[in-house]
Image (cartoon, rainbow, N blue to C red; front, side, top):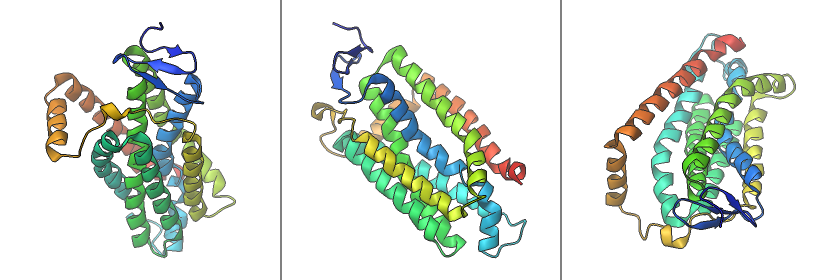
Length: 263
């Protein structure tokens, strides 16, 4: 019998809850890369188009120093933040895979809508929708990891994925700038939508990781509020949340000033 948090024959993983979860055709290493790629879609959605702000101002007839394009990032974050509160309970009720695929459909719809938008206002509308969809892969990937791993092994995987989330904003603007030499800013949005389709196909190799007996029997506001109360009254959880808030604040500050770098 393998100890908790190690791979068993046939890619079965035993968690601290002593439940066996099959990874199907996905090996442990491929699983980590798949989850990192799934979460990386969110970072790609934010950073790939940062060098495109000048082109967007030109297309929409804005002044060269107009700041309206910065709202493209802001509204995305709004959608991302709000929708995360919804995807978690839905995934606990209906399972991980239906919910992540639903999020990816919304993600792709928002990306393609933004690519085809005739005005900046419509770009912002679809960017908000895009953010709502992006919350799905981000939340569900973390939930899937927790379904399968626990303890130190889970911590190592989470750390690797956090590193990917930090690394993507470093390279994505450079990739976007290179692509803008040969394609329009609208093509960047379509490229991200296509990337989501690729990840969705890749996820078909992974089976459902939340067994029926662990799902919520029904969706209730009281259940969600109780879970939130448990989190916010736990000192360790609050401490880590504050730490992540500061780190994320640094990332947002970078995004706010990055256009000056790419100009």
